[in-house]
Length: 201
Image 1: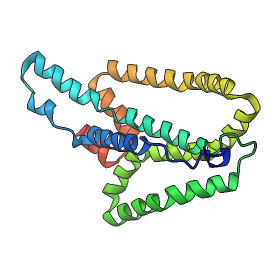
Image 2: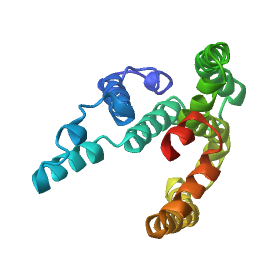
Image 3: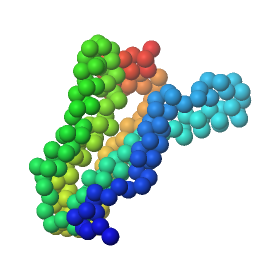
Image 4: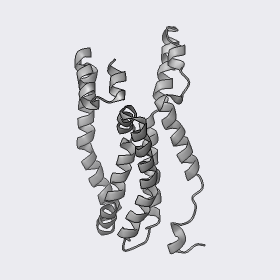
């Protein structure tokens, strides 16, 4: 049996498979799925139900949440049982892992032009969220060692109530708004990016 020091370095079977499924799910949510909605358009109630299921099942946000859970598990696993965190080592590993591909994407989009740069801003929100977690993990580790996971969990849930309520309120206003108000809200939120232009055109 591996010792505590080697615990976090053991390969966990199934994680790569979960990452692959989540990545495929995100691709489907961005248009790689079968166009059932268009194919079944005008086919009555049954076609509308199937088309709606096809659009709703491939939830890219849920797949991104899976990525977040996996990242949290992997990052904390190597520190299980440790009294102190190697903060410099933590940031070095995270920067080495995420900076090269992120810089490469920025360079490619810069070479392709402003249209792709606008799209890039819309699709990298999950990467920025991941970076925020990387930055906050040392503080979370200290709080975990000091107060325990139960208190941290309940504090996190309490802090989540406010943004969830704000999101629900915004969504309700969008659903009850007239088309012109909806158009103005989307344009204001997304700015002049390519995605906003496609959406409001």
